[in-house]
Image (cartoon, rainbow, N blue to C red; front, side):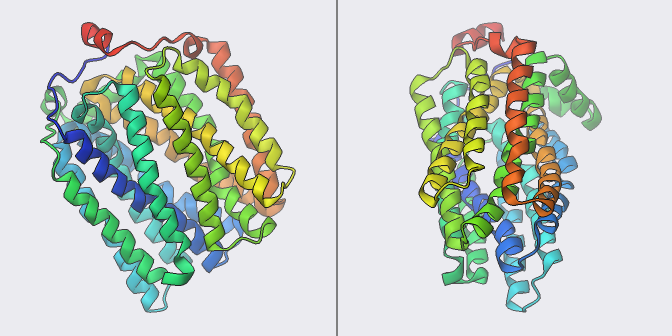
Length: 413
């Protein structure tokens, strides 16, 4: 049973939340670009080593993510998010010093990835849980507007990454740190976000297990998290691991071209969310999620034919449209269904489905690309897309789910 947040947030809180989260996303978008391109474009490591590096960087934060969910439910969200903005600004500055001393190597990049991913894991559950406490909109619109705004500002991170050859790695790392610190100023303008009373009263272990129980007792949340894991494993994984090698080997792309590819993909994701917003609140989000699966398989199939550069970019835009819809539908539906007392922890479990899939797919797809070729790394995503469709239709809960309007949620609470 969903328990609503009773207190009405003050005017302006949502705007400050969007500002802080957007600057955070800009820094993290740049992080994703830098981590990949330092391995692929600067150090020129083979695909298997790059995939292994991403696995090393993203496995440790998995346990940290549960800690992030626990902290998000037990401590003031504003103070926690502010602390994370300060901490995440430090690794880029440290790596800039390492680069300036001409010491940059494979393991420094891995350590950089571990530190930033770990801090992100501490922050993300609290950041996502805070959303419904700072907005007066319904959950679907609030989440979608947040994704649109953060993705738009996140494009600036890719733009800075594309200027890497001009500005130099040291300067770009300092700019990344400044993005996080600028977001701190907006985060401090949020209202106090105290812990949920039920979470604050219990022991840490009791609160943690209560979050898992909340997921266990909600079959639809379990379905969404499971299907999201499958999707992230070989669809999102293909974007993260396979596309950089397609860009470099098949299209002879440099850092600027890789940044453009990422920007085109993100633009597609933004466009899909803008379109979704016009139709929200959606009554049957599960059906749309399932229908997106075969369309993504067709996009990946088209990429296998090594299309000309213009068509390649158009397909990346279409892939971004598709991924934008599916990711938003998963997040909005879980937010709607989550028990407010344990929302940070429920969202941390959802985030784990992304984060477990990422290092696993990095290792598996990186090895597959090295043993075969980059295009072969797209094949598993095609099969998994159809598997998700069949699994979702067979269980039927997701297909039948009807989203409840805000006033119904209040009555049920």
